[in-house]
Length: 241
Image (cartoon, rainbow, N blue to C red; front, side, top):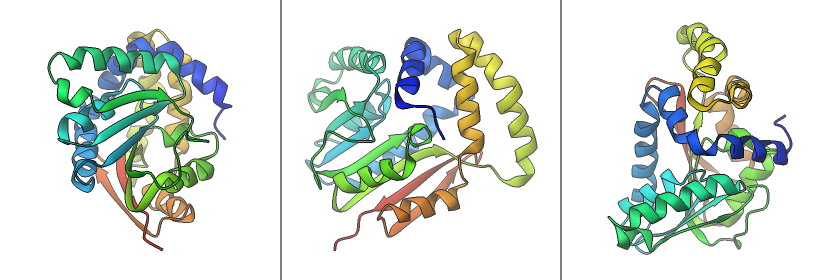
C-alpha cells in the first residue's frame, strides 16, 4: 500500500527542482524515448480539437509535448503537488517564446487522481506517466480515468513493469543498490528514491496490471513493452455502451 497522499505530495515537493535531471540520469537517458512513444500514441488517438488530460503531470513534460505534437488539441495537466506544477508553469512560460500556438492550448492545475476535477465523459484522451504506481488506491484511480473519458476515448498509461525473468536479478541489484545512491547525488534526497525503488519493485507485471485496468471498466486493453523491457505503455479504450 502506498503512503498516504499527503506524504507522497510532500516527497515530490522536496525533489521537484531536480526531478527532471534525476529521471534522465536514473533511466540512462531512456526516459525521453519512453515519453516520445507515449506522446506519439496519444496524439494519433486524439481527434482534431480534442481534449487531453495529462494526469500526475509533474513538471509538465508530457503535457507540453502533447500540445506541441498535436496541432489543435487542448491539454490540461493535473497534479496534486504545487511545487511540481510551479516547475510545469515555468516550462510553459519558457516554451511560449518558441511555440506560442501550442502553449495557448495548455493549462496546468491542481488535481488529485483519487477525485479528478473533471466532469464525466469530457476527455478524448487521458495520459499518465509514472503516476499510477503512486496512487493511494489504484482501483479508485483507474475508475476515475474511466469516468472522465468519453465513450470511445483512450487512456495511455506509461509505467514501470517487471522485466523479462533473465534480466530481473541484475535489474533488482541496480534498483536496490545503485539507484538510491545515484538519486542522492542527483537530488540530495535518497529517501524519496528509496520509496520509488520499492514502488517499482512491487508493481505488477504488464499482464496483471492489464487485468486491473479491465476491472476498472475498460474492455479493450493492450500493453506494449518499451526497450529494454522495464516499462510498458498500456492502451485502454472506453468502449461505447
